[in-house]
Length: 522
Length: 64
Image 1 (cartoon, rainbow over the protein chains, first blue to last red):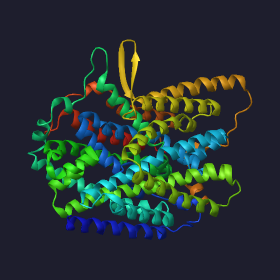
Image 2 (image 1 turned 30 degrees about the vertical axis):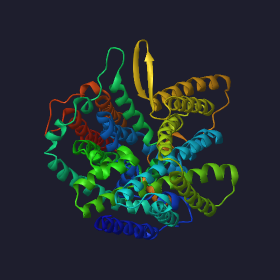
Image 3 (image 1 turned 135 degrees about the horizontal axis):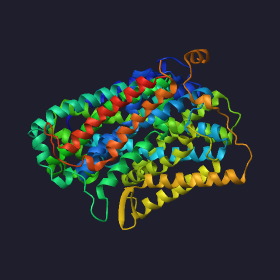
Image 4 (image 1 turned 180 degrees about the horizontal axis):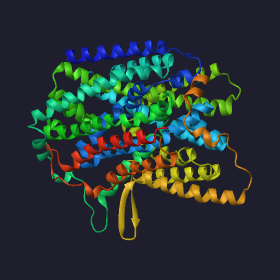
């Protein structure tokens, strides 16, 4: 055990714990109200939103899994870069509309919007349940990030003693999320992101220099790893896989409840737009982090005997921790590992808040207690946020990690199926709620079937067009199917049922809320 | 002030990152390398900055 690294690590952990509790007093609001607890009163400006959304989207799991993919598979793992490029132009267009309609109608979740737009409790339930189920394994995977660094610090990982650091960090996280709501991850995100930027910038100076520079490093990577597999006469090979993974992941990201929660907490539409200009700074960071995978590969950390047992347990996920241990002085290992562990806490907090909001608004209030007060609503959400985290903890301690990874894979396929109802719904009410429901069902069914046929190892689907095979991300293919079914079924519904479509929103609700109106309702 | 319909044309610029990134054959090569980075890597990292600039331009020109 490396006491210096552990000391630095614990210092930062205690710091963010204090911040988490102090956050309750920051920009004071009535925390017994869901709008305050779950969305921090929708008052965050550009800077805070930048830290919050960045801290939310670029999770610890990303920081472990992306370089692990590059380490293990090479160029294909680099799809994270086009993926995070393609998110922002899309979100720049659609998210201010979702914010505006949510602000005007007091929507807290995407399912609230769907409920208002289509007046269908069933469709809203489908959206809410998809969100909750897709989020749960994502929270569990954040724990993997913590688990890997705790092991790398030299703590024992076997038996109940081995689980204690993880359990303690999650109890602490649960306590300050309960008391401070979304304010806690917003404040902690500032520390998390600063640590991550410092770590990666330092890594870019220290590690390539020790490997003889970038040119020498890239020269030691075989060309079939360095580039994608080019198309052959009968298959598009790596090209279509890369492009569909990037596009599908980009479309899915802002449908995750935790992304929408972070966006809705912004104070106006232009705060969101400005962030879509500024958030790519994190994408650049992620690109550099992806390259850590190659650095670990060239340094051959998996061949070093001292890390062999860890690679046996955590496989490629140990690539980055091993690289840091191998290259950094002890105290900086502490900083880097704190960055990863705290990087897990921010999204885990926001995800549990988002899942709690969904349960409270779209299941509890809709089906169980329609007459509940604001205070009861906030109380239920707080309690559910605890339950959600406890569930994730039990999951990660109790079942093999592989299941969480497989469920996360499925989560991506599922969440993208909410796109037609949410995103198309921001522009048109033409689609029918029954058509959307059928499309959602077909999309989820097809995507799940693909994952099942691949034994949950990957989300690749080989589309055959004549003699040509187009390998691609199943989520995207399932979405195309979903859209086709939604459109055809909606057209059919509209022909058979000519009754007026119910909609509690009007066209103007989607335009920016004027400042005077914002101030009047604040 | 520009008219609203005129401003909307700027939104078309947002398609550029999609065209560039989804057109994989245009960048799946090692040469020309730059600062030691194979083309595949520096080109995509460059597009992170380009797409941010594009969104900034669109924001400035269409700002409500």
